[in-house]
Amino acid sequence: MPLALGLMSGTSCDGISAALVRFHGRSFRVLAERTSPYPPSLRRLLRHGPALPARALSRLHVELGERLARAAKRLLASSRFSPEHVAVIGSHGHTIYHGPRDATPSTLQIGSADVIAQRTGIAVVSDFRARDLAAGGEGAPLVPYFDKAFFGHGPARALQNIGGIANVTAVGRGVPTIAFDTGPGICLIDLVAQQMSRGKLRYDRGGRLAARGRIDPRAVRRLWAHPYFHRPPPKSTGRDLFNERLLRHVFGARLSRAPLDVLATVTFFTAYSVAESYRRFLPTRIREVIVSGGGVRNATLMRHLAEQLAPTPVHSIERYGLGAQAKEPVAFAYLALRALHGQINHLPETTGAREACVLGTLTLGSKSRDTSIFSPRKTTEKIEASRKTRKIDALA
Ligand SMILES: Nc1ncnc2c1ncn2[C@@H]1O[C@H](COP(=O)(O)OP(=O)(O)OP(=O)(O)O)[C@@H](O)[C@H]1O
Ligand SMILES: [Mg+2]
Image (cartoon, rainbow, N blue to C red; front, side):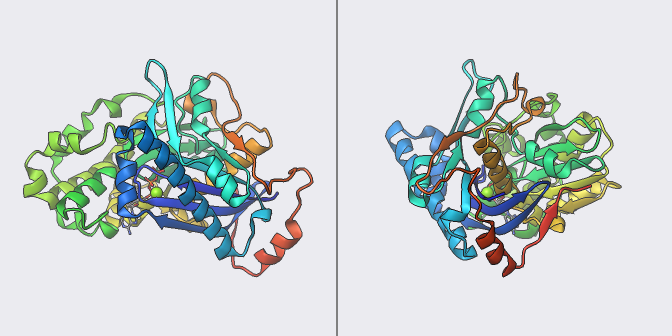
């Protein structure tokens, strides 16, 4: 199988996570991965994306496309591969709006695929969510297809991603795949850290500040009363529910008077909402929890998660050779490769779509070739041999 490159810009607006991957049967090898942070001005623009006038949004779409293209080229340059080696780029883009339950369901991811294809010469698959919505689904979550393919052949496992929003996929032999957003990921933690530092901190590094505060059990109960947590899956959410407004509603003046306690409480609550959601909505006993996303680096959050899920072991995905922020770009590289071959690349049972289809829009690149005759293995294998990469087999 040729190489595929995945690009992801998540709800945290932290930057572009990219990964270059070779897929081969039921195993894959991550040849390079990196997250390039956004400058503060772009972060602000993306955050205010939904309120931008059409002209500014249209411009942002193209500018983000340029940045995504640069991220792809930089990844290739750092890994000594060239665009000719890559069959496809899977670009998730940045979500500006996601409204699966509107009277007219719609979703908008920006980051021009035309610009990416033009600058890199590589074919791009983008706009994965729109097709699922058109088929009556929620347009999310899409990563479970990848989770099932590579982690679904052993005992029941929960694949928990903690990015801006937290989502879980439960997979395993004989286990019906179930996936949904458990609620806030790192987004409430980031908000409090940013507010208390007046924007100097983007996040609570290592969860060190949260470890110094006191958890308020009453606030935990009030947060848990949010109707989202009581809705059965399939369900997905975003910053429109878990935002500053909610924090003000629950914590009021304590946000500025006792920010360390608020931080400790939302960090605890993030883990609590994950563990409680498992108890309510996962039909199977989980044997292992594998956590990915930037949340893995928050040691306080990980400690709460391990305590609340005990005796079930909680491991970082890094244990399996995959970088915490690499999983999502790896997954979109895989979905894109499937799309390129006209193969189904989502699980309707997890999105609620009426039928299985091939998600994604294909934008051809000038260096794209007929993938049936495209066989760059010799060169890529030589480069691969000179690098220390780990082959990741589907878990048994
Ligand atoms: N050293 C660290 N300590 C604590 N938190 C960290 C650290 N490094 C990153 N993070 C957190 O991880 C977040 C980024 O994670 P990630 O890229 O997985 O989220 P995302 O972009 O929102 O993804 P998505 O919404 O697609 O899941 C940062 O915003 C920050 O909160
Ligand atoms: Mg990110």
